[in-house]
Image (tube, rainbow, N blue to C red; front, side, top):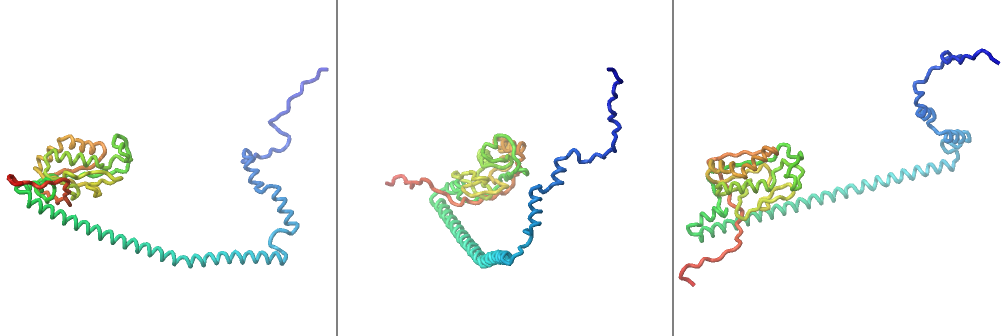
Length: 302
């Protein structure tokens, strides 16, 4: 049987009214969560409890008394804790004051002992210098100068070495091999090369930040600090050297150690300044340690 072909339904013109599309239709999961924030089971249980009269405040006298007793107990615990804290506060404050007073006493004692040590060290240095003058003969003054036992002054060189302005910023290069994270810090080995370069350039006496150097002096590092004879120094480091000022300055800057210092300035920003004052004053070394000594025997005496 042959009939007329059926036309497909027209989808562009629905029979019913057009319902507007919700803006949040694509977020059905979030919409469901927002519309049903409380689970249906919990909502049903809460409604049943409310209908039975079990919700809200207790209704029986026994329940009310139990609630009141619980509140009184909680208030009692809070009150006792506050009272104990108030009683313990003066005790803690007293212990703190006693600890501070003890620290102050020990600090004063340590300062007093340090002043005594400095006095004794100066006395030993004076006695050593007097003995050197007495038994040194014609060479006593020269020996005192070379050993650092006497204060000196004269023309010389003033060299100031300071950390870079951005010394806390790290960088690359072989200077990180010492364990420091930054490269703009002046190291102990830098000061060693500076001092050795001044000696080799003709310096007769050298001091760093007022600390006189001798043949037994040591420049080392302890953490981030530079120690000269176990005394910590802080930057900037002022190096004073007695000698022919202009000649000493020129020879040092042209020496390998002077070029090394210049390379530190160019590559790592370490700040340097050199001048040749007409009068440089260096103090005497705190004490001169005598390692070995033998009495001099005159000829013809046994």
